[in-house]
Length: 353
Ligand code: MRU
Image (cartoon, rainbow, N blue to C red):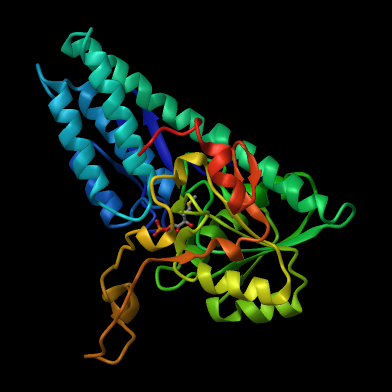
C-alpha cells in the first residue's frame, strides 16, 4: 500500500492529520493559506518538504478560487511570508517562497492577473511531482552508497524521527533510503527511535514500516548507543531540516547525540535530504534558528500530565549536528557528498536564498 499524506487535485487539498496517527486515519480539508499555516504550526502536517508542499498547495487552492483579484502578486507575497513564519528551522518553505516569488514577479511583467494565477498554480503543482522523484533518487543513491561498503550482506539501519511518505510528498528521504534497501532485498532491519517528545518515530515511522512490511524495531531514544553496540548497526541515516554551506545539519532534536554515538562506534552517519533542504547562504550551523516548542509537549501526553507540576521546561525541536560527525555523507538527489564537497556540488544548481 502507498501512504498518501497529501491529497491534491486542482482546487482541492486534503492532508492526513498526523496528530491522530497511528490510531485514526482522517483527512483534513485545507481551504486556505491560513488553514495551512495552522496545520503546519500545530504539526498536523510536519517534516521539512511536506511543510513547504502543503504551504504552497494551499496557495494554489486559493489562487484557483481567484484570490488576489487584480493584484495577485501582493496576495502571493503576503501569503508566502505568513507561511514561512509558521516554523523557522526547516528551510524548504523559505526556499520555495523565495523561488516562487521571483517567478511570480517575472511572470507579472507580461501576464494579466488570471494568466499569472494559472502559471503560479502550474509552478506549484510541479513541486509535488519533483519531490517524489527526488526522493526516489535519494533512496537509490543512499542504498547504493551504503551497500558499497558491504557488498554481499544485508544491512541494519538506525533512523530518527519520521522522514517517510508522511514527511514528504511521498517515498521519503532517510526512510526512502530504507525503502530502497528493502526493495532491493538487502535490508535486514531498521531500528527507529521513539523520537521524544513528539514521538514521530513511534507514531509515524513505525506506522509506515508496519504498513509496508518493512522489518522494523522501535527503541527509545536513550537506547540508541546500546543498540549501536549490540545490534550490528551498519549505518545511521537521518533526514534534515536545513543543511548549511559547511555541511552542519539541523534535524530533529536527538540527531546530534546519535552522531556522537555513531562516531564512537565507528558507524557511518548519513544525512539524507533533497537539495531544497540545503541553505548555502549560512556558513555554519551556529546561524540556524532553532524552533523552541511549547513545554506541554514534554509535560503531558495527549493532554494527560506526566511531569511534576511547576517544573521548568526547555523544548528545542531541533539540534545541529556538526559536519565533522557526518562521516558517511550527505545523500541528495544529485548524489552523495561529503560535507566538504557539498558547497561545490550545489553551487549553480541551487538558487540563492
Ligand atoms: O518537527 P518535525 O516533525 O517537522 O521534524 C521533522 C524532522 O526533523 C525530519 O527529520 C526532517 O524534517 C526531515 S523530513 C524528510
